[in-house]
Image 1 (cartoon, rainbow, N blue to C red):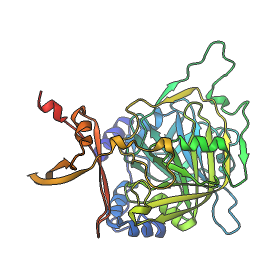
Image 2: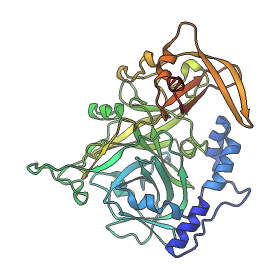
Image 3: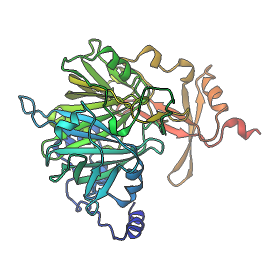
Image 4: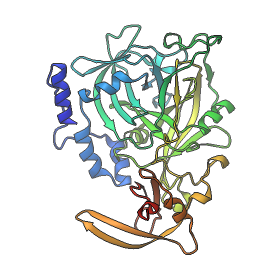
Length: 436
């Protein structure tokens, strides 16, 4: 990003100085290090953290920030639980593109919008309180995280934060939705406007530790949610979570949600915070209306080493015990549409506990193959030759008609001393094309 930052900075009339951490400086707290150690990512995480995490917003991210009609946030309630555990919420803000602005030599972020009626963010906007935002362009699968504190001089019409750290993330698991202007029928009584998101709708506050059936339906159909966590010293953090519809499970009594923690960059900011505080919040979005479901509660991490206990072929599972939830009805003047090629190719097949019947992968698209040989093509490049198991022609049937750019997901089961792997590769040429 650095050469691009320099070009962007010159065009904007200044030379960007994006402070990086000094060599040897520790970018992670004890909770993050503990999770990294157990996951085996300590060294890679340190190298990534030192180079990725900056103390200012990168100028190269300005086009992303200025083009979005939405931004998502994490905040912490002023009062904690009786045992000192923070109460963390995830939220959503909507506005016309350009409503997010970067000021103060890339050290401040201003959002020209206020939380909708009922959004818990409104009560958490106290000066110097921790806040984190996630800017995400679904269509290009680009995302950028900014963590900081509420500015002391914030006015009543904006949300302003002073940047503490900023960094990008990879595009994995993001559903490539397109935000389009909502088509307003001439005779419709429904009015959609960014400036009146909540009127005349009233939020539904549920202080009972169970989800309503409407909430359950929204969660079961979700392929995306946003996870808010916090650390007593490092502040708030917000991350994206994505998967196939149904990847978020709900307990039978509707008092708990859980999901597999898919492989990512290995820095584990979210899980590291949970390791320390045992608290989290999530927000789910109804992409047709912009309505949001906010849930807060106590969170925990489960490590599952046995294949029989894994969820979606993952050994880490996060549980969130519901303590309170809020449904905020909205009618934003945009609609989010998911094209046929929108689902992420990295999303894991659903397996293990809690998979809904309509979310299971059809057996016809699962095939089994054995490794025949490995060829060295060049330094660092190998070809793997696979053959379908005896009598199983499913693999050939599916790959034979593949088009360039489509993908195949391969799962290698765990063996003694080695964890299982899941890898997704695009197919450049289908076998049928080779024969003309």
